[in-house]
Image (cartoon, rainbow, N blue to C red):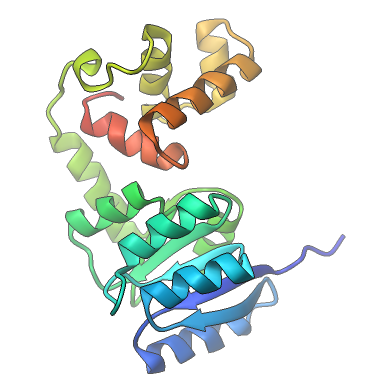
Length: 216
């Protein structure tokens, strides 16, 4: 059975770079470029109108920056995967993008194969970081000092706090279910409640919050 190509919206204010990316992506049979935008406000409008599978998002843009645009897109259409492609590699930018709902973060200069693979991963609901970014993320988490989880997440029940800690360790629902002798459905329901209470769109955001709080 032939898979439908992933529908991608390209967002970047540098026209020459944007055109290059569009040409690069259009060469892949697994990707269909459905539109482009040169600023964050236009990106939000187009994303809500076109409903692409993935938005390839720059961060530094006029009118509305990429972080705010990501937050608005994910808030209105949480099924759309946002993959950041930017020159900004500082920790503040990375975590601001993830908190906003981005599922991936690559640096400009990434190889074509990396970009295509990342789009495929984000389109499949996965979370992906470029090699340099992944190391920064791990370094950041290692440097975070533990704080009492109950003080940080008072809105969670004890059971939810335990499950959040296991999610922060990178465990999937099935593994958590086995460890806690629960059904996968029960774990999934707890996870949904956790995400709602923490006001996050997906697992990656919850992991960032949990690890910053010293869980995992």
